[in-house]
Length: 110
Image (cartoon, helix red, strand yellow):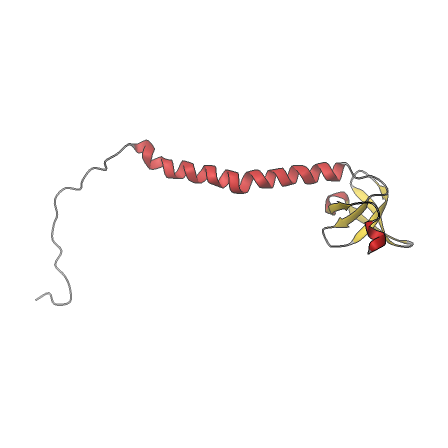
């Protein structure tokens, strides 16, 4: 009679979960540790290095901004820097927008 629908048969009591409850949390703890070492720690290290580099900026440094603009710092303030990108052309940028500091004389080669 039940050609398309299978019969539902009652089973015995459900078996109690065997094992230590702390072992059930072990995969979550391992996942959190791996997540920390692969994602959180390297990002925090990069942020610390960038903050240190931004704080050490000085007049005359050759820089590249996050937008890809290269220039020499003409004047520097607490939050902003005046960057000379060409002869007589100066642009004001945020200090945090500096991506990297180039070695001296790099802009002459470009």
